[in-house]
Image (cartoon, rainbow over the protein chains, first blue to last red):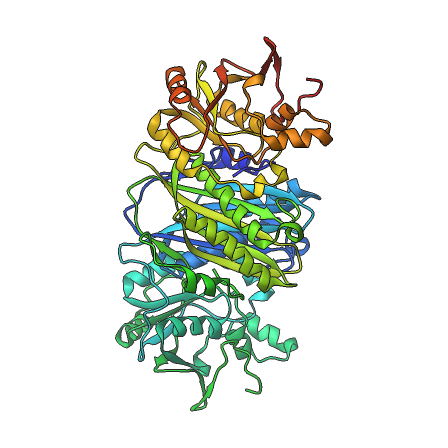
Length: 305
Length: 305
């Protein structure tokens, strides 16, 4: 880890001592304490022009998002995030100011979830801003929740309204880290995933790994006000936005019907509304509307609904 | 970790089961076994046009280098590499072929050092190829070797000839992972670093962290044939190349004089020649030539030698 830039120096100066980080930046590798829990590791790379528009949103929002999408991946395993390393390619023009703002966005989000910024690699180049965050975490004592445990009959729950995140939530969302752990304590989760690609696409990831199918009940899908607003001009329905848009970073959980019934009735997780959107079946991905089931492409882009 | 591309699919298909990887790609995060050893984590980002020229060297060489520079960082802690996650931004044009070659280069280097490719994030964009590798490892039972333990009187050893790596070795070098562990078993290493920025610059990193100084004995620095070759046209001396070029990925170790004397005499590490290049002193960075000490800038760019 070498950086011609001062990112590392900020890390060194600003990172407060954290129990799980023994040696921070300033060495070739960060040193973390041993852990008796299973380790989780996830990485996401964000690029200016693809995942955000730097000149519109600023580097702080980009940094926040880069950390938050990784936190969401740890949430999707019902894990506890611990430490992050960050590599960046900063544009040569205005790179220092961009780096500083970026760091603030990364650090604020990390601090909110008890994540130590353990190290990084800072580069500058003639290209657009690129940020890669690797987040290390650990499973709780209940173990990580994978995508592969859903079975026919399971209820499918989501943690919040969907669609239209491009209007702003894709930058400002709060990853469901605490909620996932609380949910996992409240019930045995068979499968879990965060909605990054879209409700239909990410549900399909669960189905592929679990080798089963599912139907979504059209009138049960919680629609975000952003989806309604976007539908005024997009030529798509609010439901299409909710099924296909992605970057909601809410969770989809598959649970036993008895657990599902109880979770929906008791709403044991503060701050989120658990909603049943459908059930697992033997095979296929279906949308049920007005008592009729039609095949739903994993893109969620259902035309002529 | 989401990828619109098949990188993840290759990982899933090609990654052989490894004891320390419980769940691989295909989930939101990879799951690794607990470890009672201290954990090491390092990240390096490589960009086309900066760290390699894709059209000249090809994506396989780029992938190899991206894994190897991270292995070198783990070597610099005398650690044992375990698992890697990789994020990439592939150029849209020819992205699939580039991704496949890249993967082969990454995987071959990983396999050579027993590293599990645990997951990744694949993106494509209109920009040049960007690769970020995060490597997880663990310390041996002797603990990680940091940069901060050198003290006045210590001998400074290097593991091989230096300079001119740009002629090819910066792509083809073998990271000193095994050698570092063997060296750490053979003697108590006070400080250790790999030469990425250059002999003078990286030695200076040790000195800063250890709060001491050092002199380098000009006629003891092992000069690579590449440095000699390069000096024919570069306007610099072979020694200047050896001091300043960087990307040699050899190691600098600071050891007790008695250990240093023994290591140089016994050469306990197969495949490398341990050479004394100088000693630590109270303060400053010096080059000693013909019995005279002059200040050496950490850039290694000493003019008018």
